[in-house]
Length: 308
Image (tube, rainbow, N blue to C red; front, side):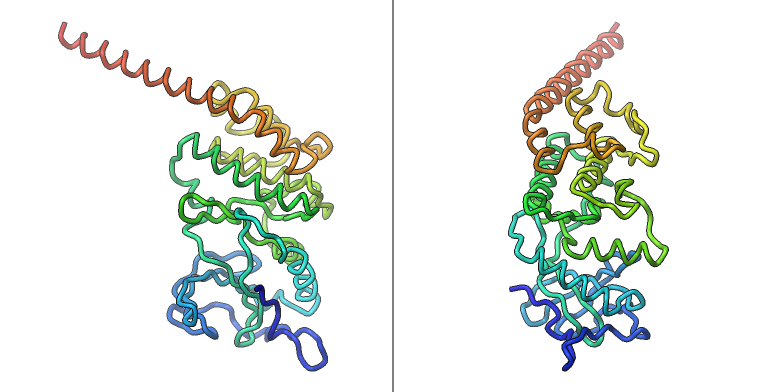
């Protein structure tokens, strides 16, 4: 059961924002309610994330603590509304909130703890088959939300969390929309994976398609396209001739700067990927075998040359 703001109301049924002089910078071994801080995992314009031990349940969790300076009554009210919209989502590729409440005058959001973010995973090599597997999971998560007409608003590698057996889960539903508005209003933050129309305050389901397309493009090329998103984008040479042309067309459609030319939503995007998945896998396997065969021939040729 998700607990939302159980300690967030006073007797007048109003929100109680954290004290502005209350720092959310915590030290290792410091206690916060039933949680014992172990280490900082990440920090951003909206919040700091810690790994902590739940001393009652005996499990490790992730604590996201928004900066006190940007949390006020209006932000909390909007966050509560967003979380209630998304709290009912139940999907293996979506990370649920465990709790969102005030602890020791700090606003604390609690998540299950994964092994690493997709952003961290992308720093190491992975097979094409694994990339396809992760793509399917990302599409499953966003398509599930879009069927319920829920826009995530902050799809990026840092918000995909890897668990055991390479299970990928999308996090920050309900938080992302509020965080984006708050950070933008504060004058900080970067465009990153945000669609152009979303940067102008007009997000749609197609905006999530654009952001997801950029995540996939980076995963496949190691490069992140930037404004004005002219095609061919940076890293295109790593795609041409190496992946099936249908996959290139799929990516181009997803990250088109014109929202009307993109997939209507992640459901349509997922359907399009399923149609080409076997083609792109066969193409990759054929290239792998050909490359291996050429490598063996080259090695044998060098050996014969040395003998001669």
